[in-house]
Amino acid sequence: MQKTLKARAPARLFVHDGHTLLAVTSPRAMPGKSLTALNLALAVAAELDRTVLLVDADLSGQGLQTLLGLAGAPGLAEHLSQGVPLAELLVNPGVPRFVFLPGGRIAGHGSAELLATRAMQGLAQELKKPLLQDHLLNNIFFDTCVYHQPGIDLLTKVIPVKNILFASEMIGAVRGIDPETGNYYDDTKRYIESSTQLSAEQKFQIYEGNTRRVFPRLDAALNAKGL
Image (cartoon, rainbow, N blue to C red):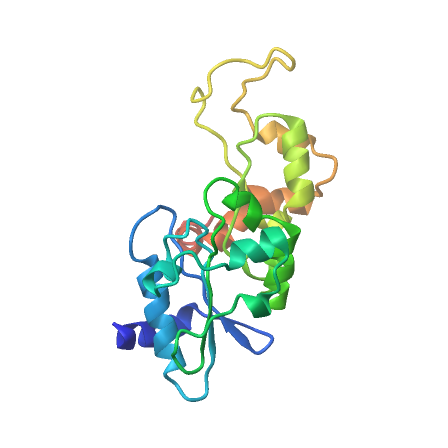
């Protein structure tokens, strides 16, 4: 397993400021993430010229620290909620060039809020993690299924135009007419057209340009048809 991970992982790594970063996650609570992260960390630490810091961001207390026999050990949660210095929380499990930051003892409700705190942002900077716009916004896009003008205006103010793709529900999918405007709720194009903060070029990018960039096969098919 370690050989497979070492062979495939480099294509997924993000290099920033001389540090190589990799997040192991999944959209659902399912087994495998902790074991995969641990095996990859051990494989990298086995190389003589590399040092690994493995951070357990699963604040349920049932993730990596359980695998390493550190159940109940303080860690990330205590750093974020109580300001315990990282130097007091880092653990060497007895493997050369391998350092581990447990998830911590404080589990249950509030874990999502802890990960969204300023303290977490500061920790990310301390760990040399790049700014959000430098790594997340290359892979995350937002659609325009927002059914009122203030929502679209906020979207286009907060999110870069290059990360917005036009979308509208199929006519009739969101039934009813907005009594304040007399228009169907699912007519989202009018919100883009009514925006006073978008230029004509930016509107084109939202309507078409961004979609063709994000979906190159669609762009190729349209070009083949002369569109």
